[in-house]
Length: 150
Image (cartoon, rainbow, N blue to C red):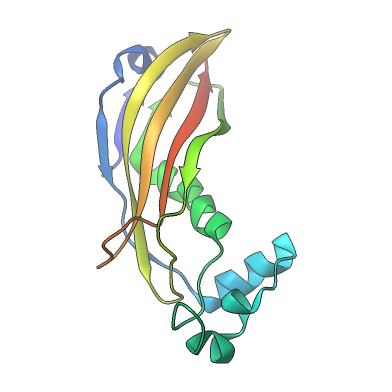
């Protein structure tokens, strides 16, 4: 469920649990397209037959592909009204604790850790975890930094 707030409410968002996104299935087509875009065609990602006998028993998504899913997931979790610009400012403390096998379903949960005023707006730090359906470890743990300008 999307949390919808106004720009004026951003200052009080620290500590807010934004909940969970819907699940998305990671496909081999996605992995192949990402491999082309990143010029990373390692066989554990793009050769399903060889990957069956590899260390993960199946092809896996690139860690950065899984991380990039934070962008569409983020839009499911928070909508801030009354802003002119929304900026993905960066990331802190990114880790990839578990690989995402092709065909897995993933979702994201997020909590706003802090809100600071910046010139012309606010920056929020969000603790984000991308989980694998049925997994014991998360696929991605990161702190996202987002800026909102009035």
